[in-house]
Length: 263
Image (tube, rainbow, N blue to C red; front, side, top):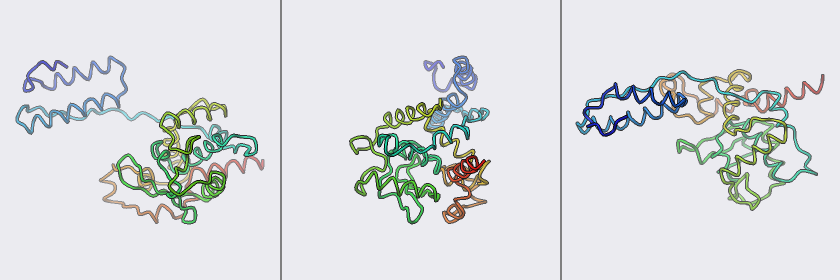
């Protein structure tokens, strides 16, 4: 876009040319949409200041299908390491994988969970650090509660310590967590190494394999969108906690693995 033009002379033709140029650079539709949102925000301000009459519409793009981990890959990742032989970091990474499949939380949330945030008896984990800055409560299925109970006996630590620390018992840096999961996955023969991919996998399995619904999923993932949907169907925490063992992707995978062993 030619930003040397006077603001009041920039029109939709310029916006469309910008979008075309972004497409020619092979940028993803979501990235292009982000650029257009920036422009929309700027010109909304310009309009309020009577500098421009341009109203920039949102860029509509087709939703792409999110890649997820397959059941075979998940079963390989969920195979418990030998606690007598493996280092603590491998065991910690295994627990993290289980936690991601239980809650579908983001990497930043994982890094900020403290021991005091875990209520095993109540079957809950409190997320103090979320993308929308709102505190969130996440249910723990029976399998996850048992895993965390054993993990905390080995991990030890004070209530104010981070649940998943680095080797110095400090908060894991973002890069450290990403590298740890990447190495763990590759060591299990799984080439996919994205942490965020577990979030997509959780959502897909919760809806398609575990009988969950979109409204409770919105609450579990801490999304602040779907405002219109929320007006028609408000889901309370008690609704999510009820029968969570039937809907948790982690519990469902453990059941599937048990059935496979029995064959």
